[in-house]
Image (cartoon, rainbow, N blue to C red; front, side):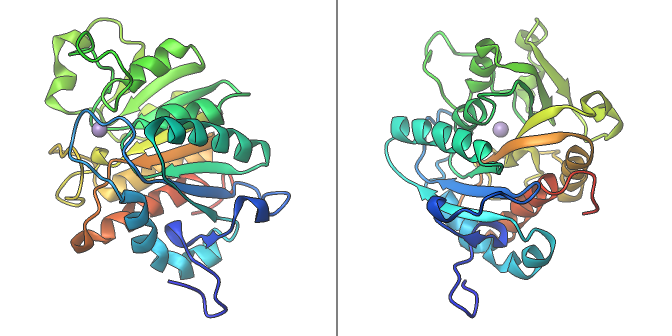
Length: 286
Ligand SMILES: [Mn+2]
């Protein structure tokens, strides 16, 4: 979808620009989206190659809302390449966009993208890492067989990096997250519900927010790579995102684990609307 004047429209209805064309300075709380479109290090769930392009085209129709509510939001394109190249590019792009005053958002592929992006975004600033996810991704079950970084263990690596003030999960509910292996000290604070009162300790903090869309219930969002029943409603997720924008300083974000499916384009809009709710002028209305 394009504007009548030929302007390209991308992620969540944001205007497409090249990195060289980014405005200086960025507007307050301006999101800068980029896609990552090949799988990085998937060990769990079905493949979602092409998810970034799917989300980008399926959410472009949000443009009339975005033009009005998030006029500073920009899309700088979709990365493709080998896993190692994309991990490095994601880290560098995130760090560079933060330095230019944007709030970078990586979109697509498996959840491992969050590892590179969070380290890039938080390179100069120690933040709290908040991930909305039905799973804990700590890799405590099988890491002796699979020591390399993957979408089921990268949170453990983020914790061990020592780069984050605290690591907080919101929405863990997969059966494995009740395993006794997680009863030992995991260094992750787990909030199992979407209660806004439970978020109070995050008030005033710098946060990086990672959205694994499987935190949502598959009834609403069936095209998930790892479906887990009894998830959040889209409205509950929207409320959590709104709370984080109003009460925290969001440095960057990512959205992953959505599978391309032309029958369910609305799921891309749910994901992107929740990200727009997270990133915007702090404390302002939605
Ligand atoms: Mn997950």
